[in-house]
Length: 101
Ligand code: FES
Image (tube, rainbow, N blue to C red):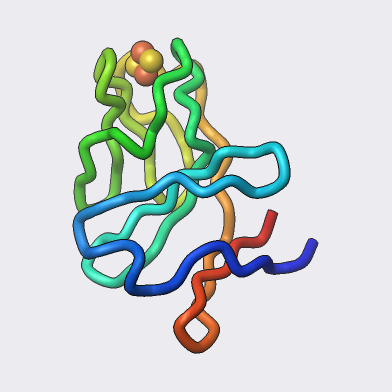
């Protein structure tokens, strides 16, 4: 799999997230103090956009019913998380954020 540029570094402020479309997938990218993570933008419980979730230091909590997921691995941590969510490697090249999908 190859890395694809999906956003600019300045597009996502620290403590924020955005949704990007990569082919047919919606992927949420999170900025935790300059470290970036990417998960499917689709909660496995009832489909909430994870990009609207509550961002912690190492996890994100779904805004609909409170399932939480590890930002690095997508592993479900608590709540109705149904096992987990897909995560994607993120790298920075120049001022581009790139995902491996
Ligand atoms: S839709 Fe995410 S916890 Fe229900």
